[in-house]
Amino acid sequence: MEKNNPRNIILNMLTETLDKGKLSHIVLREMFDREQPDARDRAFINRTFSGTLETLVRLDHEIGAFSSVPVKKMKPVIRNILRMSLYQMQFMDSVPSYSCINEAVKLTKKRGFGSLSGFVNGLLRTLDSKADSLVLPDHVRCCAPEWIYKLIKDQYGKERTVRFFEKIKEEKDGVFVRLNCTRYPAAEIINTLEKDGCSVQKIPQAGQCCLVSGFDSLTSLEAFQKGMIIMQDPSSVMAMDDVLQLLDLPSFMIDVCAAPGGKSMYFAEHFPDAVVSARDLSEEKIGLIRQNIRRIGLANIRPLVHDALVFDETVKKAADLVIADLPCSGLGVIGKKPDILYRLKPEDPEELAKLQRSILAVVQEYVKPEGILLYSTCTVTDKENKENADWFCKRFEFEQIREKQFFPGDDPYDGFYYSVFRRRNV
Figure 1 (tube, helix red, strand yellow):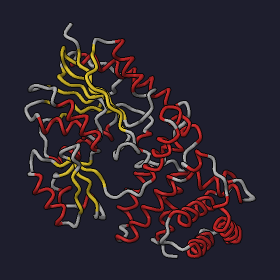
Figure 2 (tube, rainbow, N blue to C red; figure 1 turned 90 degrees about the horizontal axis):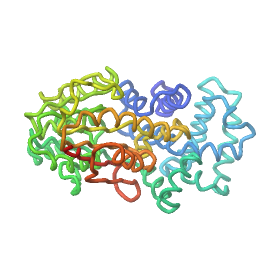
Figure 3 (cartoon, rainbow, N blue to C red; figure 1 turned 30 degrees about the horizontal axis):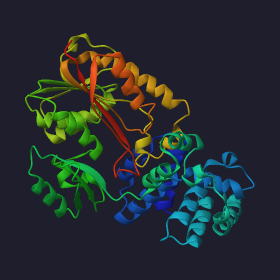
Figure 4 (spheres, rainbow, N blue to C red; figure 1 turned 90 degrees about the vertical axis):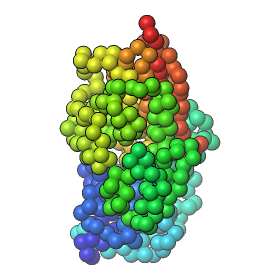
């Protein structure tokens, strides 16, 4: 088996993510940079790797139902070969089951576990013939840990929760981008994308956003390299649109958890004479912001390593706008980061909600009288969103102007919450 065999690559990626703890989107990006697979292999690797992670709860449940060895006690390599093979058999119609099983046996032998090839072969054949007969609990059908399924169901009801998980498991057809219309006409950007073979679909609700598909690598596109496009979900852009229309020639904005910089850049593009303090916790995150502002060509953003929990006296009541896009459980972006499903712990939403309140208590001090604070998260639970917004209004001298929750299954975008506040002039 060649080193760059797609299934071998997928197995390595699953090992890095599931057994070594690396984030899936980083593993995926590094693999594409390192291996440079062709378009066909790239699509197969992406679909199988991401799909295996998205359906991990269901795959493990089914494997465990027919295996003489509990899933947790299997050798990691064998466990991941079974997972990726079962995913292909159940969810990829273009891959025949016999081919999946044969390749799984070859991969088992290649990895030095020839003595277990009979176990892999027999278990996958049993799963192929009998897995459909299993009666699956609701959370398993949704491919979610029981506590996450219950958390969402208790707030949204069963029907919407099922739609939520169906939506995030849909095969991704392209990425959302925002057009850099302050430097280039929209028609020129779209024409540049189409010349590179892309399909471009406009998003009416967010005027500068498009869904772009039909490319191998976003970073290889001329439009990306020239700074014509910025990866940004329409829900985030709509939040910023709500905020920008409230501002009258602002001179200073602070983005307290800014990386990778989408909201800071959107503001900076619209108000080129204003200064933007784009802050985040680490040099690594600030490096992402610097990369983006160089590519987009913005001179009015000042990246700064700063902990949002630490009060900065120098900017007290100085900002026309403070953006607080805060750490959260990330349940709204499981479709992009499926490892959230098994990294997240039951106590995390409560702990993250407390962290958000601690940050809000600090950064609200930066908003000048009649200035604006945008509080946002990429999750869907009231505990991390609406309850914190209510807490904020009761505790500080702000009025809530706008509140919105985007919910996958109801909306075609990421799960995203935002609330817009204005400081009272007291």
